[in-house]
Image 1: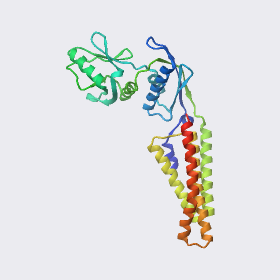
Image 2 (image 1 turned 30 degrees about the horizontal axis):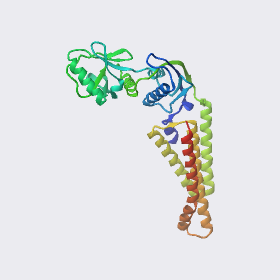
Image 3 (image 1 turned 60 degrees about the vertical axis):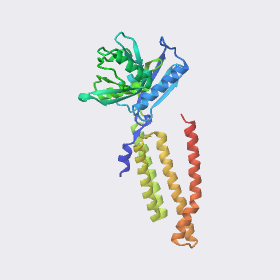
Image 4 (image 1 turned 120 degrees about the vertical axis):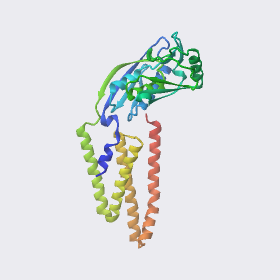
Length: 334
């Protein structure tokens, strides 16, 4: 009764809910030609930007010598997300003569907040070297304007009132808090070493259609119901206790996935089913050992203790083997 609503709150991966598939192509710039190192750095920066969006189970990977594939499951505004991914994000501070006095390399952090007048603001924090440069520049340009630009476009052009020695600055003018968050993500992730152009952008449907998903859910429920009936028929009261324990186990697992912001995918569904099967197997082992002890004339208390202790070795071996397989898959998986 509670499992279905709880399961609906768990995030779903691209294979279950669909999403956006993007192919970015790297192009040479006057400063840098496309090479393996530049594309690796660009892939890492794109990955940081995607992760900062809080998407579920995104995919960022290289393709060939000059392309990056990005898959964004369940993104609400794909156009805005795509524009952010391919943006070079070259931050520059320019003095009144137009000379660049600071850039993104001098930036330590960027966070979006609500500033004075309830306006979206991006707070900048400089590195130690950047703070020294900023203090020097503002001291030399009191009463003058210093432009803050992103990819050559002016974000803000404030007049310096006094020397700023705290190593911090602000960017105002963003229309919404979402825009400010996206700008902060761009600045935190760093500027791309090469220019990226979107050459393919398409919506991807889920691997399983709605009919297939509903059929899978029905099959899962029928299978679980069969297990519950089996436990009740063969083990009576003990089987009822085991069924309640399995329900609690499933609910706790879904709650944990929700709390950890984990993503449910097709392999994940298979893993959940496998874990339920292992839990049933453990109960069967314990109950069979318990029944053997009862047939041998032991008291209920001693039969229970002996049943647990005799089954525990087998259960432990099974779980250790599964854990080892998980570690191998985690290490070799992509």
